[in-house]
Length: 154
Image (cartoon, rainbow, N blue to C red; front, side):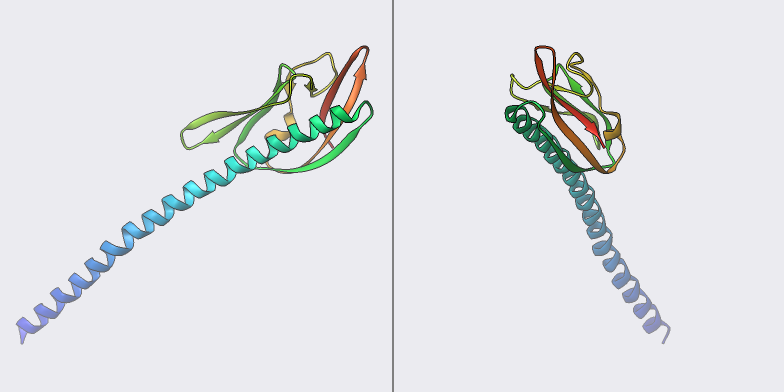
């Protein structure tokens, strides 16, 4: 009688151990896949935002002085900094699983992009550091002999 109880207890323990041996690795795989997918979605969002800003800026520039457009972008929560460099590059500094990374978007050489006036070819777009839905106004301005595209938040 005692041996039957011991055998059934051992069989029960083996079933529980086998169940854990299947559930724990599966849960880990699902968690790591979910984490990777989240990072890929954020990277894709940043890429889409950068392309939208550059494409809209180029269209507005070639449409002429006084042209403007408003766009809405959904900024993910991993953006540390967004800035314009040399009037041609929009750089997003984003947190990733591997540290911080710069994602750079270039406009065509004739299109000068600025966060303020045509005289400033660089500067941070402060409002794009925080996550959430943002509205951007992209307008073609002329200062002296120079045309440029100003990007500002509304």
